[in-house]
Length: 123
Image 1 (cartoon, rainbow, N blue to C red):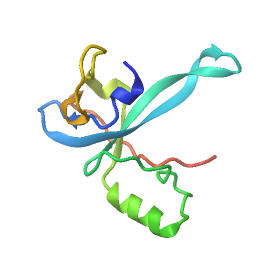
Image 2: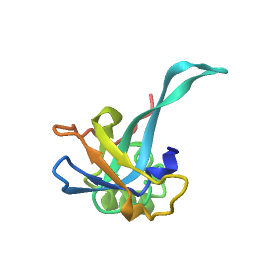
Image 3: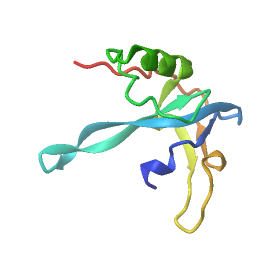
Image 4: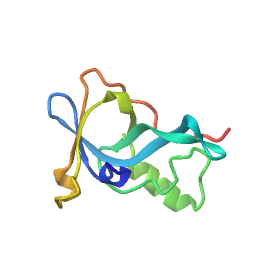
């Protein structure tokens, strides 16, 4: 699987209730050294209940300019949450020999998954 296969996939809970769409992924650099940096690991998925479009970087809490665009994107993505990768039970993504649209791809979450704040802050 490649990460772009997850983007725009429908996310459902363990009972099959639709929660939204995968709009982005979160990676962490904590794997074995790969050159100068640690290898990336998939940390979680950002799930938006309203849209399959990206935050365009405005999930960072200190990004506010241009103000009109920042306000519009934050409003459009209200209710978005981060779900950690271990809470994903199944990701039915496209195999190399098939072509399917994003709406046909499904990510199913485990029972009792946690919703985390999607905001990024700079340290």
